[in-house]
Image (tube, rainbow, N blue to C red; front, side, top):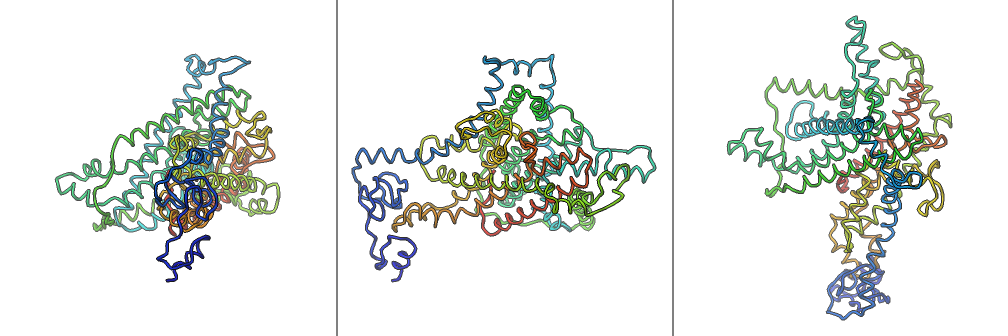
Length: 628
C-alpha cells in the first residue's frame, strides 16, 4: 500500500497513489514529467528508441513527425561528439603529426628516414627493431611460463606454504619498472650483493656470475611482469570446472594431454590478455636494456634521436614501433577470435588437490619458502640501501654506513619533495580526467546505439597498444607548436604535457574497467527509474553511477599506480622545473647517490602499495572486474 509513497520519494514526478495505479504514460513529444521534449525521449531527454516513453516502456504505436525522427537520429551523435573530439585531438592527430614530421622534411614529402631504417648499410635502426622484438617475444614466453605455472599450482594444489606464497605472489606489481631494474642491479649485477658475497665467501678474484646483457633484461622482465599472466590465468582457473580435466583423464588422457587439450584452450583469453600487456611493456622497456648493457633497442634509439634534436628520425622510429605494436595487437585478437572457449558445464566446483606425499610436502615447503625469499628480496634490498650513505658504498658486499638523512631530506627539504609532489599532481590530474572521460565513453559504448560504436571503442583502446615512448613522441610532434587542441599554446616544455601524456596512456585502463562495470548492470533498472518519472540526469546520478562506481574507482586507482611509476614517456617529456619521481630516481642513480635514489623508490613503492590495498578492498567489496 505504501509503495507509491516510496516511489515518489525515490523519484521526483512519481505518483503517490496506490501501487495498483499506474503513472500516466507520456504522450508523443513529452517527457516523463510532462516536459515538452522531442518524441522518443524520456524525462530529461534520455535517448530512447522510437515507440518508447520515459524509461523505454512500450507505448501504443504513434506516428512521429519528421522533426522528432531526425532528433532521435542525431542525439546519439551529438552525445558522442565531445568524445570523438578528444580522441581526435589527443590520440589520432598526434599519430598523424608524428608521421607527418617523419615524412615532410624541408617542405617536401620524403620517405628518406624510412629508407635509412631498412638500409643495410646503416644497420643500427634495423638491429634495434630486431632486438626489441626478440626481447619482447622472449619476455612473453618466460612470463607466460612462470605466471601460468604459479596460477595452476596455487589454484589447483594444497601444500605447505601455499597461502603465504599466494599472498605475496603479486608483490612485484608494487615495483615500478625503473625501481625493479635497480633492485635487480643491486642484487645480481656485476657489483651486486649476491655475486660479491659468493666471491668473498669462496675467495675468488672476480665475481663468479652476474646478470648482464639479454639474460639480465629477461630476468627483470620476468620478475616484474609475470603477474600480468598470473592474474588473468588465476581468475580463469577459478571459474573452470576441474571435472572437465577429470573426465578427460577418465577417458584415458594423460595429465599432460588433459592440460594441453582441455585446460590450456580454456585459458586462451587470459593468455592473450597477459601476452598483450607483457609484449607492450617489453617493447617500451628502456632502463633494463640500458643498465644491463643491451646496446640497441628501438626505444633507446628513439630517445637518442630525440635528445640529439633529430625529431624527424625519432618520429620515423616511433611510427615503425606503432605499426609493430598494432600488428601484434591485431594478431592476438585474430588468434583469440578464431577459436571458441566456452565451458558447457553448469557450474564450477572449485577445489584443490592436497599433496599428501611427505617428501613432496617438504619439497613444496622449501620451494614456497624460496619463492617468498625471491619475491621479497628485491624490496628488502631497496629498503636496506635507502638507509646507506651516498658515495660510501664501493667494493663492499653491503653498505658500510647507514643514515636517516635520505628520508629526512625528502620530507624536510622542499627541493627533495618536489619530484614526489610533481608525480602526485600529474598522476591525480590524469586519473581524474581519465575517469570523467571513461564514464561518459563507457555509457556511450554500452548504452547508446549509433553507427561507429565499435570504431569508437577501438579508438579509445588504441593508446594501450602504443608504448610510452611512442605516446611521448606523438605529443611532442603534435604540440611543439600552437594548435586548437592546446588552446593556442605550445605544450612541449610545460607542466601540462606530463598529465596529458599520462591521460592518454591511462584512459584505456579506466575505460575498460568502467565499461565492464556498466555492462554488468541490467538496463531495466534505468527503465524502471525513468518509468517513474525520473529525469535522465537524476537516473544517471542515483542509479547508474553508484552501480558502476566500484569499477570506475578500481580502474582509476590502478591508473593512478601506473601514473606514479611511469618513466618511459616521462624521460622524454619532463622539464627541469617539473621532474617526476621516476626521472629523479634515474638522475640520482647516474650521480651515484644510491641512498637517495632508493629512498625515492621505497616511497614510490609505499604509495603504490597503499593504492593497491584500497583497490583490493574495493574488489572484495563487490567491485567489477577490470578487463584488459
